Image (tube, rainbow, N blue to C red; front, side, top):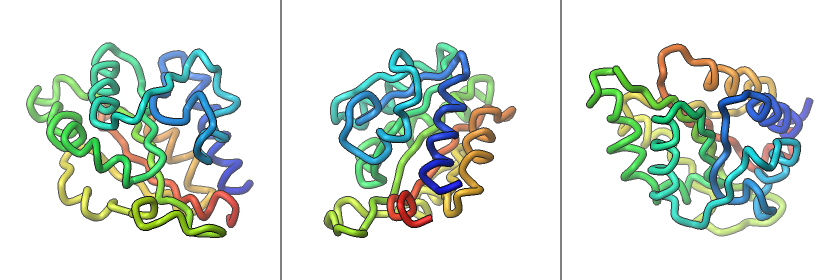
Length: 178
């Protein structure tokens, strides 16, 4: 299957789980290509949020602490930068601060913006995976380079037994190219 079809199947899988909830920008209304991968997910499992990335990550952490499996959607890495405080200082450090008694297990979904067929500007195409690997201690970053990586990676993130949070990085150009 194509990159896009694999993403759609992975989101359907997550949406079928009883404890999942999707939050973020363009999860309930169109606006990004990621929205199209969520169309088959029950609308009651999707919470549309305004553009307040730092608050979104705090909400995701709070929801996860109540037992929800949260998929927090940031359409671009460049937008996720605005949530760096919550991601680095709270989500990543919560397990350490609690001596690993509490592990949020968030699924954070982001993307590197597509450059083809239209270049959207430098503020949309960043890939900060390597830099964040240096900052994060308990969050694993997985870059989804190939279609066959997508479903196993999202299943892995959902089924983790170690409670770690997982940040999955998609590539916008691959939505139509692979």
